[in-house]
Image 1 (cartoon, one colour):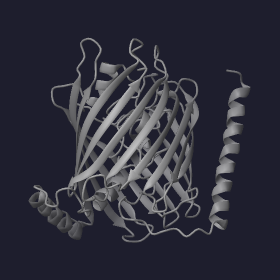
Image 2 (cartoon, helix red, strand yellow):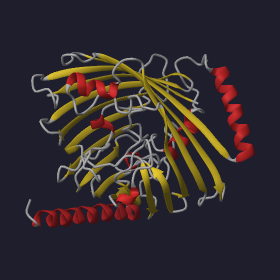
Image 3 (cartoon, rainbow, N blue to C red):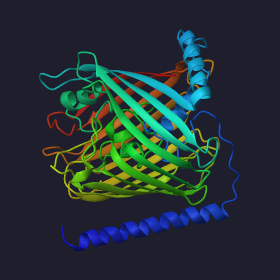
Image 4 (tube, rainbow, N blue to C red):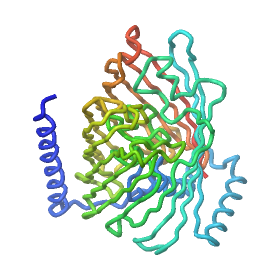
Length: 447
């Protein structure tokens, strides 16, 4: 690559950023369309994003979800347990200002065919336990909180769905993001101090955090509540480091424009504290603009510009392929209906210097909230479809395409069930196959 290419790339990104911010500021000042009050079917976002894998967002999502009672079966067999847990949580909070919550997600998955010597089905469970300790400025915009997230994952004697697609189909788009065993089964994934809010106009975070749950994310693209693949849920054309020590800051310029910066240990590892003394860092700026929102639950369209020093030993970790490099990621989120229940998402990312898991990543997704597909009508269900394309940096791979369709509905209060279809076209690691499928059933319990 010539020396002028990075300079041209930076100039192009700078111009794109200027345009995005200019559009956001103009819309903020001149658009007079009335914004409707949000229908309470989606949890509020935290100051650093809305992905429920992020502890700050997960704490809000759990509190929101346990208060939703609409479901196919109105009385849950888990109601006695829920009542006990609810009472204990309230008592703990009243005495200590500590909020606790948990999610339990289980995935069953089968694939159409498999490479020799590999499994055709797998099942795994993932558990998240989050604590939010309100320590200073309680109930004020500048409230300060200590967040802790313990994460557990285990399989049941078979290949976990996160490995099933790669090993069985040869897919690098993946068929079951996050559903794979940990050794040990439980880890301390996050612990950090966070202060501020959107209402305050600023926020910062310092401690062990997960950049992949913060940068280029959307509440509509997450393996615990929506799609399942790497390609459709994660921006892995960003060389995202694993959970590690870092610092982040967010500035809410107004109710339409937000700028977030993240600096994190490139050698971070969720199983330990990484090696920040090696001096390898990942840095990113995430520029968010709400373009033409129809409701106050509209999400940000984003431009992420990033750079990584790479890992100290060149090993791949999380979204990082190992080498140093840079790139950008674009996400456009657009409400198609006046009630905000129909949403279109467009995504594209490009990494340079073979530094990220994907060299190129593109996708389009359509979300239809509360379609009430079940007879009698159930609110808070979701139908969605996505098309994705990835060009991996893995040696010997080829570009891969994927189609995902799912329907999610509340089976019991606090319990969501998802039926999911995934078609894999031209699997990246299997040149002898043109097509394969993965069929999944996901059950998620929030309490």
